Amino acid sequence: MMGTTQEYLIKGGNYKSSTNGTFFQWQLYINKDNKLYNKMANSPTILWNDGASNPDEVVKAEINKGVIDILGHKCDELVLTCKSGVQKYYFSTNLKVDPKLFEQHKFGNWNEVISRTNSLPLKMIIDSPQFTLECVATEIVSMKLDDKLFELPADSKVEKSPY
Image (cartoon, rainbow, N blue to C red; front, side, top):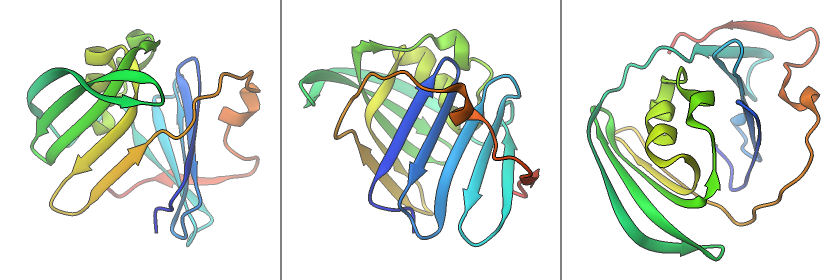
């Protein structure tokens, strides 16, 4: 449903994730709106979540140094114990991200991850009673990205997510 591959693009405070899933198609975060947009295959409507809201809560955070090597990058591990379950993020301090860009992005604990690591995760494992999600980077490519990649499609039907 979620797919076997994901392409993650980031420029400034915006990001877009696209998958080959049969249910979930893409997710877009537009920093200036602090909204996270999700496109599912079964609906023409794009659902959005307020980036400032977070029904989850981090109970404990710990960092373990030099846990794994991913694509030639020695990675530390951030373990967030949350109300929703355990989230593990593996990151290299060589791949920096400005945490100020995401300080308002509380949804999904993203501000917690970025503020504690100052970088993007190269691997993450999200474990909750509903599902387990594991993503591992297979390639890192530096490229120039057009700002239009981080815009909603023209004439999109958009509504607030009920979740």
